[in-house]
Length: 391
Image 1 (tube, rainbow, N blue to C red):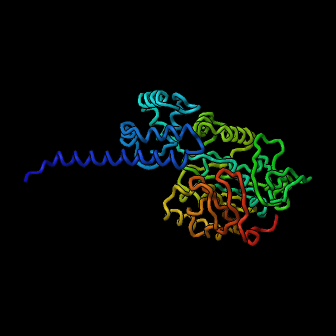
Image 2 (cartoon, rainbow, N blue to C red):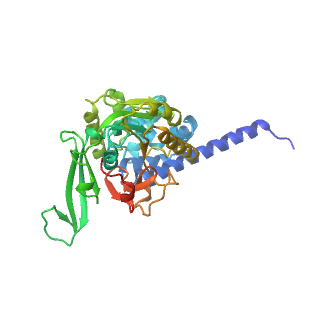
């Protein structure tokens, strides 16, 4: 039987295209259901509509390389960055989606260029509220080296103001220590720069004596970070515009937090930010840390994008660097427990699987569970054996 080789090749090409389109549609469906739902009604609806639009998914899968460039939030941010229709609130309803789609297709070359040039990684300055209690306990001064930094905002924990809400169960009634809300007594502990435009609130069971106060803040002698696409929102308006585009519609709190963080760090000297692969750049950058300072290598929600083998390689490298440094140093990891599985998984259940808590660990020993955006800090059993004495 004769076989038409040309037709066979074309059939395989069509099959691959169909698989790519279906896979991309599924990716948007998952994004809508597991990530956007409950956080941004606009992104939930828009990503769901895209998942049901095979022609548009075909455009995306055919013109964007597989992997990071096909992340849903990257496309949605690119359109907002370019002032596409409904940039602020998102397209709601059939007619609005039609306008959004028509504009995006018509400006596709510009949208694609932004997607290929930018990254969806952002700094979340609110993570500093959960990192601060550890940083304040380490031998001072500190040399901070952040892996996976984007805009360097987490390298300035000393420029923000913190309000820790301490909670414990009570049997009701009035109390001078603070207001009672459903049997929970709330007291406040404040730390940080009192005039900072950014105030970060964090719920915790830790008492004021266990938390850093205004007179027990970390002293930072050196700041540096590594990122594939480090940004400077304090000096580069276009970088700030991109970070603002990444904030999901309806999340006014996060948008305000970003603006306040940028204002807080604007007067400060810029940290040293290195563009490149974290494994390749880490040894040389760590060697620049001043010898009289305690080197702290840290990262927050930054390693999930690495393959498991690369995470293990990174862990081996960090251990080696700290062992080889005179006086040693410390490693603070702040990731979902599945990212670094050799760290003991804490016994907990996240209330929502798509809004998973992060595990805060010091030198690979879990200390606390934290909210994904620094909104809570829950001490784990045995943390007292891990935490160093107050510096």
